[in-house]
Length: 318
Image (cartoon, rainbow, N blue to C red; front, side, top):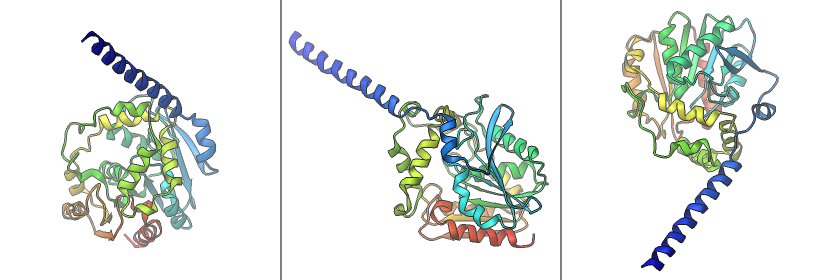
């Protein structure tokens, strides 16, 4: 028995040692990437940074300064880079402003540690005030759509039109909750070990046609999430996420609204698009466009068609 216990102890000790070594090696391999290094790769001549209540926010402001203004708000885990096709389709006539919200892209973490929706909307408010913008339209996708909903509800006098691309606000996991949803066990390990395969999985789950998921996009997500402090910020955001009483917000929106949704969306299914249309009883007009075979990441998966539909909507007289 003693010999058996010694052998069992040796095996257990060896397993623990291997796990420790694996953790150390993994942590070393998946370390944070310095902000300056990421900025060299992902910033461009249009990139600007504004200091807003302690946050160094990355944004781009493109198109004619005298043109009608459109604000684009990216999805969870993504960055302002996702909007490149839309900016190309809009900036001849429109002034297009997009930004990385905290814990994403080149903005990095919020020193306050506050990643609630209220704080996020507050920072959007501060950025637009910094730019002197008082009248504009908004488009947001996924979490960006929920942010747009909250902003438009808070500032109905500023927002002229809204595009919502499969916002997650009506997802049953978060809808109507007054506490954050539960997170998977071991989520904190992501702070230290963040394999590229994780982002391949996230993107594949968001696309209707998985063949359109490129290694370039996977690498972009993986690298930007390893911006200094970003991984911890992301976990904190998920722990603080409460979408609020979105049903009431949606019912109160008065602006002309275009809702876009992928019919192959498994993250927030297309039936939620129809629920959103039914809720928008106060809106001046509501239009729904669905895309066959397209999943949750419609801007990535159908960039030309979604950009064309967005342009047509913004070109229509209010």
